[in-house]
Image (cartoon, rainbow, N blue to C red; front, side, top):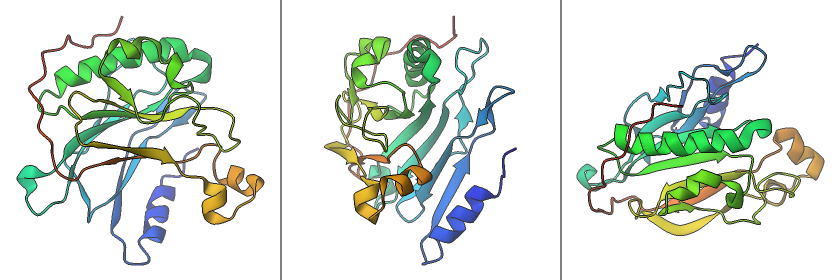
Length: 226
């Protein structure tokens, strides 16, 4: 059973020092036996939520947890020049990553067509595979991964599961800076203490606050599933 008050309590705690974080959360996603929720937590003084988002339709149940997509805009002195972007959360099923990664390729192509007014679409989360095994996703020749192979993103420092993907042809705002937060070192924790928090580490990438214009992208085929 999911406690729907936990995230609200967490955000209240981090705002106790005067911060102004907010959040948006998805519905329960998964199977009858196991469900999860995606969430975005953001600093409202730096970023504003442009819509409440949506869960990608998956009528053929090709994914156990369909991505949740939300659009954001940076807060700048000139909103017309602010960086706008869409985030699509990902958590593949370890036992079915090959098939789900193929589906994510199809969804990413569909998103670029469906969200035709937004060219900065960022796919991020737990892919349960290193970049070299992303398979069909690499058919998008301009797709880029913020973290290369060999950068461990799990707490036990043994695997590259998590990443941030974007189309470098359009997301010119990426600064080339990305990494993994070493929770043990940052907070002086033991491995056991860090594992009690999560078996994954936070990954990050840096983007400019201002929009960098790219040429209009070509029409893409529609996502319909298989």
